[in-house]
Length: 172
Image (cartoon, rainbow, N blue to C red; front, side, top):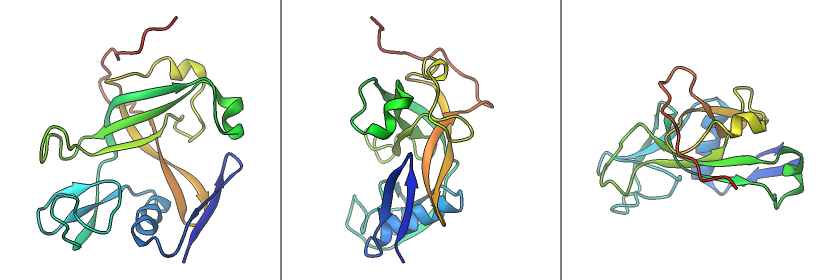
């Protein structure tokens, strides 16, 4: 059964033929971050797929992960393409490397997930929070409920983590 919902007034749909994304977003709908662990090699991967990206094997289990990680890169958006974001600029899109499986199978193949920087209540982060986050910031996943049994993973500052001084792109 397809998942549908709305976020910031935008319609979101995962079709019933997209089995891997149905599973992923269904777990997110239960506020669980789960990734595929491939039986052939024991590795986790993201994004969801029909087969292991390393050897093409189709057998996997969905394993829960901590949902904690480090900002590896970000984009600070000041000119939104979607009208729904206009009232929320600037906002951050984060590339987060999860704590699980760091450096495996190589330093270039870590688990990295994109998402917006939000408050703990899943509201897009206000400007003062945006200014605090950069490369190196420790974050944790939170789930924005967008429909019945459907949520999208987002990122908020991990209040329990020791926070480094993050690197940020120079401001003009």
